[in-house]
Length: 246
Image (cartoon, rainbow, N blue to C red):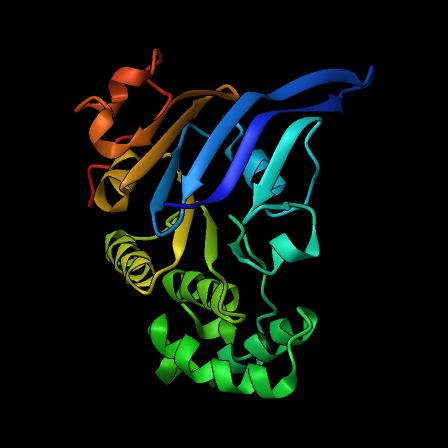
């Protein structure tokens, strides 16, 4: 099975503080993701998950190493065309409707008007928002906002979906609906890569997993290759939350 993502020996550092000291965020990360998989990226808050996602979607370049999507450098236009991205805290203009939001993002991405219009109905239907297409976003629930976020990520029909903490802040029903949506997208042939700090989220939907702590990979591979209790990978009790609500 071909790899859709190939990360080779990536390290990332930033300058921080008054003295602009160098802070290492990611340490020698090597990771490959095969096509048509649901790949979980599990780790505590502050582990480096969002930093790595920013490298994958081309928002930053790694200090060392390489990141390739479908064989293209992650910073290239060719790679970005393959990716649908939902950030952890997306911001949407509240006065827009679900329909006009997609028109707006489609235009920003360079899609032609007829392409946008032909995609809006099927995309909204896929995320369960067909009946809310003319409803202003200020009236959307948290779960609906997450789903419209996935709708904008799907608009250009990408092969690779990258979701940063897609279940963050959702109630149990919203989490269940998000899991079902992710599974449905996988069945359509897309590859999904999503981050989480909740063990049960990845156990419920993933077939592959990478675990990160303090910027270092603790393990990666098929879910069946991990210990029955993922908490055993962590040395500190506060590292990863165990969601007991779902």
